[in-house]
Image (cartoon, rainbow, N blue to C red; front, top):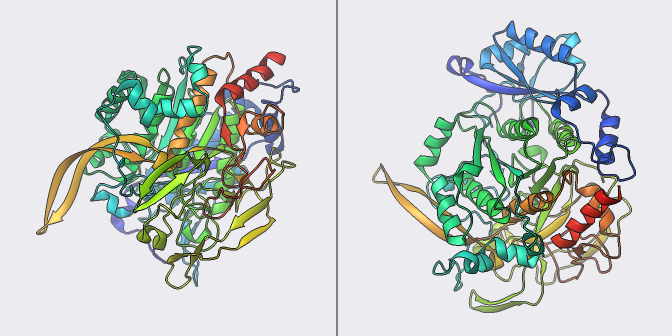
Length: 619
C-alpha cells in the first residue's frame, strides 16, 4: 500500500462502500445480557432478542439513524441501517462519500501507513465508534483471505486449499470407487460424526431439519461441484436448500471471476459448503459472499459487512467462517479510517449482537500454529480472536503411513503440528501445518476462561526457528522447553481432525489459466483431492445445527457454557494434554483442562447435546 496516494479524477467518481459503526447505548449492560442468555439462573436465560428488540434495548434510536441518513443524503450518499441499529452501510461515489465525512488522506512519516481522518457534525459524531472503509485508494490486499492466506498464484494455477500441500503418499486422492456411506465414512461427514459421537444424534433422526447455517465467505463456488460431491457421498443433492447472498459485489461480477479461473477463495468456499451441508444434510445453507475485487471497499470492511448482513437477517442460528481479513498485526492492517483496535471493538460488538439473538458463531483457528503470518517471528493470529465466537483448532487422528520415504505412526489423536511429514520447502517457508493457537494480542482474557486450569499458563517447544534476515525457517535440533504465563483471550476453544494426513475429500472444478507465448490459455480441470486444515473443523461445527434441530430454543453463545461443562466430572470433552501434542510451538500441559494447541479438547457431541438439553430442561 503506497504512501501519500491521492484519488485521481476517475477514482473520485468510482463507487465506494463504507460502514459507520455506532456505540451501543450501554456496552456493560449489553455484555451482561449476552452472558445472561446462557445462564440458567438468570431471568434472561434463552430470552433471545430480534434485531428490532436489540435496537430498542442496545442500539441507537431510529430518530438518530434517520438524522444520519438525512445528513448523508445532502451529499448524495445512500445509507442503509443494519437490523439492530449498530451499523450503517454507506454507499456513493468516492468523492461524495469523502465530502460527507470531510475525509482527508494524511501521509504519515516514517514506517507508519497513511490514514484517513474524518469529521462529522457534533450531533452525529458522539455516538460513532468508528468509520471503516473511507477514502479508498486501490489496496495492495483487497479481499479477505482464508485461514492459510492463499497466494496470488492461485488465480493462475490449481492448488490445494490446505496449508499442508499433499505429500507423496498412496492416498493423496480419495478412492471414488467407493460411494455413499462407504465414501463418507472414509473421507467425509460420517468419518467426522463417528469420531466425535455425532452419530448418536443421527440415530435419533436429528440431521439439522428446521435449521439454517450461515457461512461467511469471500469466494463463490460452482453448484455443480456440490452436486458431484453430494452424489459421491450419498448426501441429499437438493440445491434448493443452498442460498447465496452477495454482500459487496454483484452476483454477475462475482460469477465472472468464478468462471475465469480457479482461485483460493473458490476452493475454500467449496469445501466450507461441502463440509457443513454433509454434517447437517437437512439444514439450509445461507452463503454470504463478501467479494470486493472491484475495489468497492477493502477486506476488513467487506468481512464486517458479510457478518453484519447475516446477523441483521437473523435467519441463521449458527454462523461459521474460515476467512479473515488479515492477521492481528499492526503492520498488516489495511483500513485507512478505522484503526485495528477500533475494528476489533466493532467486531466484538457485532458478535455480541449475534449472541444476544441466540446465534452461535464459529471460526477456524488457523493452520500455521502460533503464527498466522509466518513471515513474522512474533506470535500472531487471524482476525478475529473475538471472545464471542467459538474458535476451532485442529488435531491429527491415529494413522500409520509411509511419507517422504519414512514410516510415520501416530498412536492416538493429538494436536495437529508435525515437521515429520513436511518437505524441506515447506519447512523453509514455515508452512508445515499446525493448529492455530495461543494468545490474542487484542482481546483480554474473557470471564468464562478465568480460573480455568491451563488458561494463561503455557508449555511450549521452540521447534521452528526463523532467520530474521532471510525469514526462512529451520528445525531446531535440540528444541527448548519453555513454560510461563501470558494473558489475553486464549485460543482455540475446541478442536477436531484437521491434518491432511487424516483429512477429508474435496471436489472442485474450474479453469486453469496460464500465459503461453503471451497468450492466455484456459483448460477446464475437475479435481478430487484430499485436504485438511481448520477450514474443515469450523464448518463441521454444523453439528450445532444437528443439536439445535432437536430443541425449541437455540443453544446460543457456547463459550460460557462449554467452559463450565469442561470442569464437571462427566465433561463432554476429551482433553489433549500430553507433552507430545504440539501446534509447532504450544504443547499440552499435563493435568490441565485447557491447552493452547487444542483448547478444551475434542467434543463428544452426544454428551454435549445432553448437557445443553439438561440446562434447558432444568430451567
